[in-house]
Length: 168
Image 1: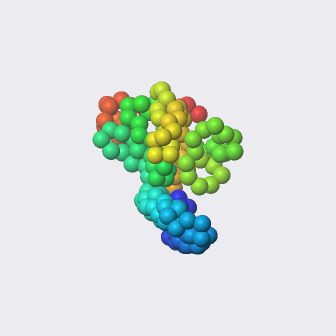
Image 2: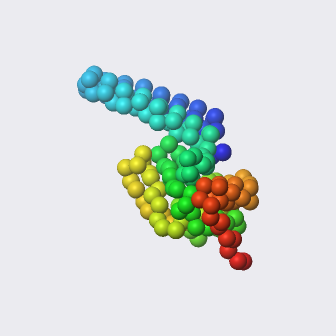
Image 3: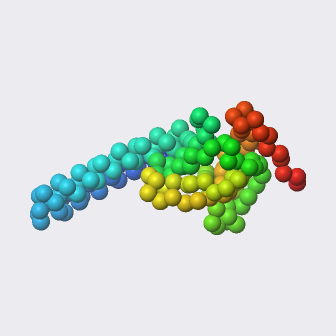
């Protein structure tokens, strides 16, 4: 589970948001009551995004649906790639510090599952307002060998193709 999926994290963020909303209202209301209402309404609506992000993070986030590999890092970031586009799946250990420009998902200093695609797939950020093409994605998962085997099995089932393991 991601850090943003913990109960204390969402509780802390909601408490801070409510406090920020109240403080901003009392600071703006002497200047303009309409502006204060508008600002606090926008801040309160942010709670919808916070709760949606919490739910995605809590019930995380790598699954296969209708021949597509879905990876949801948060409410704002996702990847939807056809299984046929995956060229390699491998488990191992990669230091995240060395992967500066790569997409890395999960907590910890090392990634343990790497997905490589035949061609660039779209990593959608900020609710698909920013599209970033990626060829490799590094994940930190609890059981990398199990995830690797499951993805390979789903690829074989959906495409009939077998992904060969890279020689070590």
